[in-house]
Length: 202
Image 1: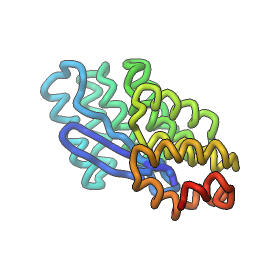
Image 2 (image 1 turned 60 degrees about the vertical axis):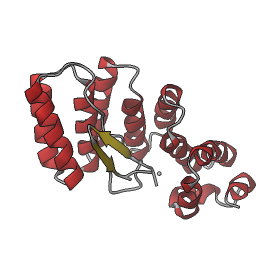
Image 3 (image 1 turned 90 degrees about the horizontal axis):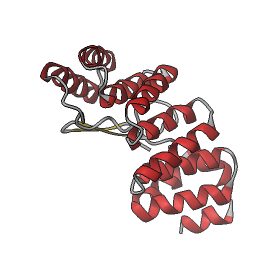
Image 4 (image 1 turned 180 degrees about the horizontal axis):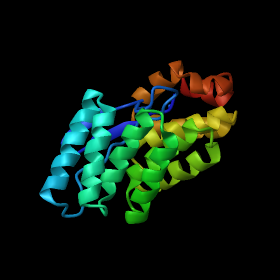
């Protein structure tokens, strides 16, 4: 199942092929980090409040806080990324993708925007779009094991054993825990008997 890894201002949120903002086969969601621009203090306060609520499971409350942060500072990409994660966690993947699109327009060098958008696309069945976003996220942050893992999930869903194994191998090289996750991850069922995949499970 897709992984979602979420990082937000002094707060680490793990959601669910890895981390899990979504309750389905979910990708790990990366919540935005500290706002990069000099956002107004009140906007930052709403951002922090939204992140705390998201961590506590209050997704609607988090969205309301992110809405206000965006109203006060519409040019801060992290506000959109975190709101996108909250929307994805509620199943509103199209709304999440729209927020990630905005974040990318504001900052094309932010890997978490591409990563989370890839997760949302994969959850909608857009494997090609998801892989393209994971590729860009990996280009910007090659050390993100979750992106390599979720890219492997996308290839596995397409029944492409060699490519799924190649991506998973990179994820495992960064984080050994990915091997154990893959052993029980149903996303890999279509390629579980492929020799390349089996070799990684030893």
